[in-house]
Amino acid sequence: LKSTEVQGQFLQSVLLRFPSAFRGRSRRPSANPAAPPAAMAATGDLSSGAHPTATFPNAHLAHAGGAAMNADKNPESRGANPTAAFPNAHLARGDAPSAAAAGAQTALGASNWSPPVASAHRPLEQLQEAVAQEDWARNYAEGKTKMQAQAAWSAGPERCSMLQCLATMNKASRVLEVGSFCGAAALAVAEAIPKNGEVVALELEPFFVEFGQKFRSRSQAGSKISTIVGPAADSLKELQSKASSGALQPFDLVIIDGDKASMKEYFDLVWSSSGLLSSKAVVCLDTTPFKGQVPTRYVRFGQAERWEAPSGEEEIAGLRAAVAAAPEFVSHEFGGLLVVQRSQQQD
Image (tube, rainbow, N blue to C red; front, top):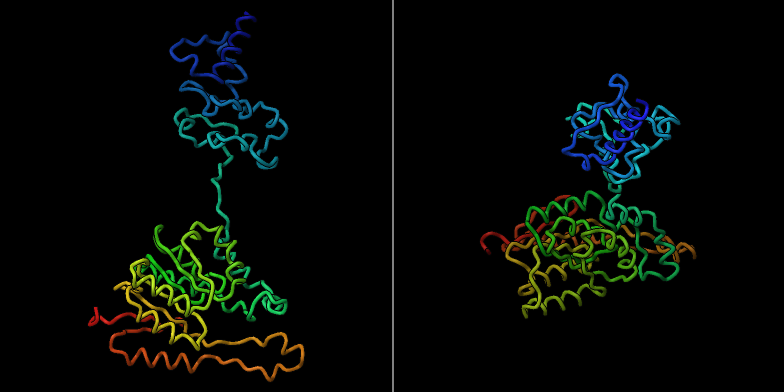
């Protein structure tokens, strides 16, 4: 009788780990039905099949009698679930489908499987934070940049959301940005356009482009962005030549956020270039007055009061007036952006 009981326990243990090997065969009953084997008691009623983790090599870790569980009966106080490091750990949940069908509640039923969680900060947000924390005055003093930049030049969350909205509403696929700084706006728009879309960014300062490159490379939308380094007027003329020859597809959205003194020139180049803009194109111009920061060299030699930076307000006012007077354009201004389209009569 003792031998029969030992054999029954052994078969139950094997069945628990490899149930598929005994399908279609009768199970040998325990010598003492009133006292089920320890493995059976640990997993509950196995009348409808094996424990959901029984077919995996680490199933013994899910048993209530395992060493990990005996060390501490409260899974919450001892840290991680002993099966948490294995690929099928989520099957040990008490609400797993097979366990519910069997009416069984495992000792690990209180544990929950957590899916992978994405980083709380997107590459765009990381770029904006990096720009805000960068010492731009020091970069200029060390000769890394030709101009003393400031974090306020970068597109913030509100501006990025506004540009994404414009791109989505106008179903833009190809975008041109004149004056990109470190590329926050370009990256935001790239996230909003289709997978086969493209953002062409023009930027004068190589250091700004290099600064934003590592953040673009972290984003899935970063591959949609191509940057042309150099004076914007020269780059626009090069694009104009390619567009007129048919070597360049037209742009659906143009963002002009360069130096205020040249905004009217950029605006005229964009609209006068044959084939550069699509029939539904929208051109956005930044109308935020420039608030210059006194360069370090002026402060160092006590000449800060002698440095003056044009705010660009006169240029902005002149551009507003020119757009309003042109019958071929219709415009709206909001959020520091002057949004211009062809009037319906010109379509």
